[in-house]
Amino acid sequence: MERGAIDVADLSGPFDLQATVESGQSYLWNRADGRTYEDLHAHGGDEWYETVVSPIPDLTDERVPLRVRQVGGVRDGTLEWEASTDAVPLLTHLLRLDDDLDAIRDATPDLPLLERAYDRYEGMRLVRDPAFPCLVSFICSAQMRVARIHGMQRRLRETYGEAVDLDGETYRAFPRPARLAARSESELRDLSLGYRAPYVRRTAEMVASGEADPREAVGLPYEEARESLTRFVGVGDKVADCVALFSLGFLEAVPLDTWITTTIEEYYPDCDRGSYAETSRAIRERFGDEYAGYAQTYVFYHLRAGGE
Image (cartoon, helix red, strand yellow):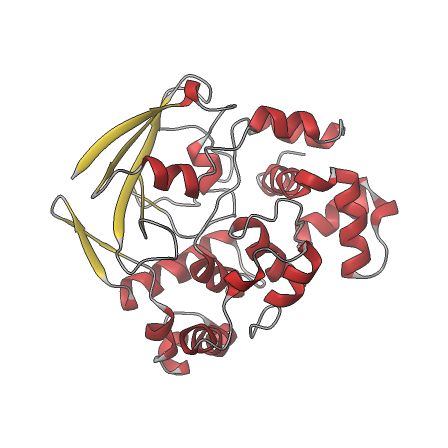
């Protein structure tokens, strides 16, 4: 096992691990104390978070168990990590430690709601999850609280994910597409996926067979990328936007979920254009096109955690 640390002061801008991995962007990290997504108001803290990833995300068959925690503040703290390989490139990729967060904030409009959200959760970054687990996570997200979405992904890992060891502890990777494609609908329903079970199974089958791959959207113009992702069963515009934003690097994507739709109604009613596509364009422009997804995520977490 290897151990190391990253000084937050060496990053471009602040970093808050807990806010980043418990803000509804990712369902692939487990908090070691078993309380992932239990406290919507929390930020900061020094709990260990655990996941299993590929050394080069999505591109190799190897699986690497990884643990990380933050000690100290969002501008002067330390990220301590343990893994079976050098975790610095992995953490930099997964948690977007290479983003210049101060510059991103400066590039977004001076909107009072945004400023309150940025101030409350200073250091929250977007994630860069592997594409297939991210896709399955958000297929499961319809009409679900974040804790239940996380529970579904945890059960998928524990039941069908391959085991990997780190210092005597066993961790479970997210199941490969072929493994989920081979499951029956009833087996997936037994994990509380409900009506989403056939969507997950068919999407896994599409990826495993080579019929479609979410990573094919990378490099397309943003709205074409969103349309490309809706090929998968159970994926509409909102889920496609989540995958585009939290996996594929489209930082302009603004998923129009219930929270953001309510935000538009209450704060920016002139952005409601009557259709997903037109409303999306309007709110992206209001939030600042290039980093609208960052603004959306801060507003989403701020409001979901009772910030207004």
